[in-house]
Length: 205
Image 1 (cartoon, rainbow, N blue to C red):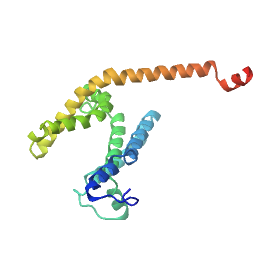
Image 2: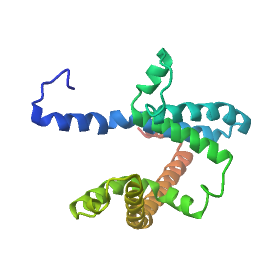
Image 3: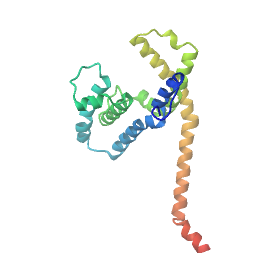
Image 4: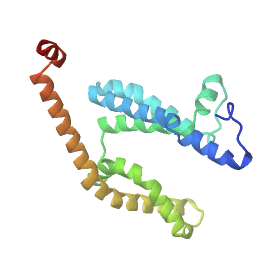
């Protein structure tokens, strides 16, 4: 977009935000997640998952933490470390999820984390509003600039988003999923009873 159209300086911040937040800019992350789901569904051998995802997780973790680590420069490293950070994060979490699905640990796979997992889509949709209201109400300003304060702020956002998302999940998401399943089942039944409606229509004519 910046190469096709000319934007005044006052709109540059909008252009940068749009370039990052638009659907096409985030699509690779969704594709990574879908790819991870398909791998889990196929139930590949654990040994294969370990051989592929183990080294991949380490490489992506280094890329995620770069430039905190001063690594030797070469063509592959430069290309990898110049990849958009959210693409690297998507691949990192995908590899981690595949490893965790095959080697679950009580610390990370428990009632709390699985509940958050069920609410995750609603939390994804609502946490932007939570952050906005935290900022407008001045709640975000009470946290000083430090790693510990950032962690506390993060946990507050997670808890607030989880509380709001529980109602979205219970009263909107679950009924919507149930409705979708009923519509799919009805459509499949209609196809089974009338597999080729075009032929039947020709015969009637």
